[in-house]
Amino acid sequence: MIAKKISQWLSEASTIIFAISLIVSIAPNRVLAAQKVTFQYGAASHSVSIQELEHFVTTGETTPAIDFLIKSSEQNPETVRWMLAQQFPVDTQLVNNLLNTPPGEYFLSQTSDVVNTHSENANVRALRGAVVTSASDDSYVSFLELLQNYPTQHVYVDAKKLAKTRRDIMTSIEEIQNYIIIPLRFVRELFPGY
Image (tube, rainbow, N blue to C red; front, side):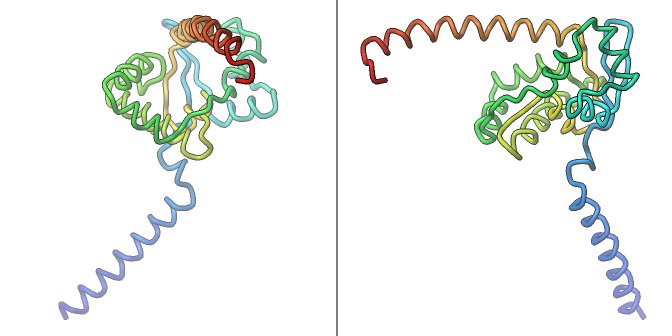
């Protein structure tokens, strides 16, 4: 009698475990992935689905929600589309190692002011997971991919801070290029075949 109940319980448990495994294997990236993004502009906010953003990046066609966001932020639609789709090459193992160091934690902490869960809980871990997941499939990360792989169903983006961060990053890139170009020219003059 007891052996029959245990056998029946094991059979039911294995069926449930098999069903859960099947669901996770069919849609591993969507089980815990963002479905909606809320862009905040100070006190105002507006939400769009990840599907709308994907469609916009792929086709250039907007939806009423995306039109509203573009008009509210006074941005050129093609600039927004480019910002969402722009890919940056990333070595998955290297980025994972770097994001687990104190400077990497600091970077994630600062970035989580722009992209976050809105609850202050686990923002750094969520962002690290989104970056590593985004890089793991093709060694590239885009802002859209980061949003797609964010491990909560709802992600929040502070649009004002995003614009400022973008300006800061562009300024930093220009400064870094200036520091690299001059020594690189010097090396090329010394070693013409280099």
